[in-house]
Amino acid sequence: MDKNTIFSLIKTECGRAKYEMLASKKGIFNRIRLYWFIVFAAIEDSNLKADD
Image 1: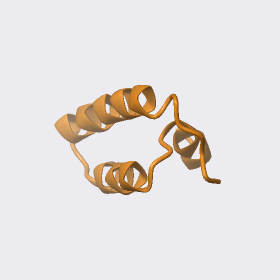
Image 2: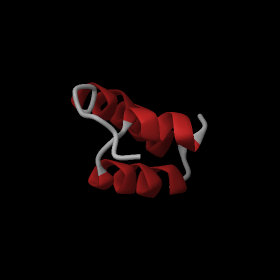
Image 3: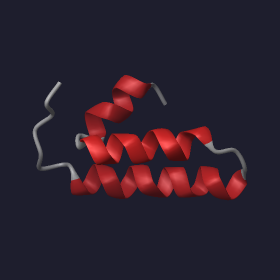
């Protein structure tokens, strides 16, 4: 996914930092954890307004 698309879903600074950390890791379980994080962070941040 494009970083701009992800950052429109993940709106908090700590969430974006966690995304960057998880995205830098390689491996199948790390990819699954990244996608899991994206889904739940998007749900959690869905009611927030982006600062960008």
